[in-house]
Length: 336
Image (tube, rainbow, N blue to C red):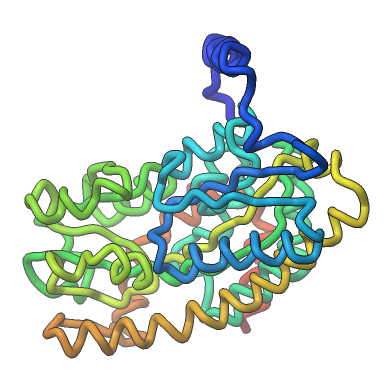
């Protein structure tokens, strides 16, 4: 569970809901269960489209008895806010990064180890196999969060407005925005970068106003949030896999019938398969579109990536005990 939530917040939320007579958007009304699903992605992003497809599929298969209302683009808050919302009951489902979830359940940080995965297929083998199952079961037991799907946000890239990034030293004089998780901060500090945390929905303005020179995000986020309009240099570093977890409160999930649970699980698996294929396809389209716009796309060689990996090796050493060295070793073996 999110450890930062205080009793005060819970009481405030309770009395606000009581004063308003509750919120029927997340309760059963007239035989229909209405659920809120919040996520931080822009509406045109494949992950956002996947959320809508999931909601449509569940509604169709349940004959309308389960209605999922999707709130995109951080309308209900960012990754951490959404996780807190699952605890408070203000959000019923969410789609958030493994990096955010890993702040409270360390084994999930396996997915975010720099340069762990050789390619998408390697990442899927880990997420869909025994390792992923072990992590998901541990998360549910530890935090009360049930994983319905492991969606693909793409591999992270480096962008900036100043110059091409081809080696770690090119980052030294840049003001970089980094995600608001400890592992992300540690990763950039390992490269000698003191990053600035800025919410994703405020990042375009920060880049436009030169509050920061650059940032790291998957191509899908770069393109759909139009970062390329103010970031002419993009390096396909692929330094971390940005997996996104479709989560529901485990206790809330158990309140549904076996049939309804199966409907949600089957819909999640179907949408997961569609989204992964779609994400890879549109990434290539986005890259070609940005090249045509004159954006400098730097595709690192394997040798250049190895230099970055060496520079981030300390992250492996720092986190291997919390993640579990056995999990890391098993994940590496699946890529051989």
